[in-house]
Length: 368
Ligand code: NAP
Ligand code: GDD
Image 1: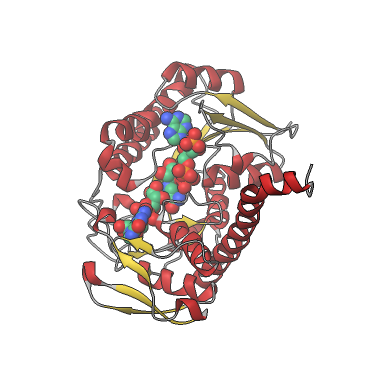
Image 2 (image 1 turned 90 degrees about the horizontal axis):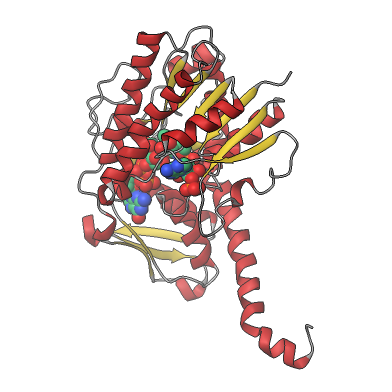
């Protein structure tokens, strides 16, 4: 009999990679999706129709919908990845963020109890390095004190503690993976890394003039999402439930990420100025770009409180889970994202050109 997994947030970056990973392991995979007026299932489109892959409508803000799915699926493992996951957006929608990212976790735990699955269903909670927030130590490990620094992080801190509480109060097998930033060619387009790789590709291909960013000095520990979903699974395969930091242990600034991404797109930048006046000027690359400002700072992307110094210590994951934090290097990650976006932008350019000229082509009988 295949093991049964239920993934909330299946349409997201991590949900899509995790689905692939579990299907390859022979799991029957069920995912929760929510209704949308446009199709947001792009990341899992290639999995739909597979015999072991099933989707169910539910919403993290709707307890009954979660209970019904849990009861129907009766999972061996739940991966709770669904969240309003954008930190800056959490300042604009703090109450919604709390409902989904904090109370949503409680709804999943209670659904498991309501369906009398607490003795056999294991639960993974997508926790985050944002808990360290205004950091009290660098690097951060499982013992570093938390200091959440956004409505998102405060909501996720509730998720972390309620998981711990249900583990201790009811003996449930539930764990938090404290994951540091992980990126990929499937990353949402408003997170800084993807925003940069898409802009570098568009600027290189003449479709964008300048990239506006916020805090260029912010430091992150960036890994590859595909490597990180393996940890989610490993965490649920341990004899005893426990929490783990998942990170590479290597730190880079937003500026360094941009510098390398543009280089991969064939553009060399020189950064000059400071703070809101800092600029990335093209010093090498296509003739038409030399001397132009391709990266500039906009205060629109500053946050009321910003987390600026994240670097994880993955020692526990390395020793206890046997996980390799250096599988994909920072340089490989930037390269694979830029390569993907260069191809995507080129394909979109061709499609746009065809759309623009369609009337003329139809008229001339070039296309029918
Ligand atoms: P993501 O791409 O933004 O995906 C979020 C998922 O949650 C999407 O499938 C989204 O559905 C779903 N969702 C949001 N609100 C929902 C609701 N009310 N009901 C049902 N589903 C809802 O995020 P990700 O990068 O894959 O991250 C996965 C999880 O890990 C999140 O909990 C995030 O906070 C956490 N995390 C991420 C990172 C990282 O660096 N990526 C690091 C640490 C922790 P739609 O597609 O319909 O919007
Ligand atoms: N998004 C964005 N856009 N961030 C920018 C920009 C910009 O134009 N310019 C600078 N930044 C800075 C932010 O201020 C932040 O310090 C850093 O880049 C990273 O921002 P994001 O890519 O939005 O990610 P995040 O670190 O805030 O949150 C992500 O990682 C968390 C784990 O630490 C999300 O995936 C969260 O869901 C996750 O928990």
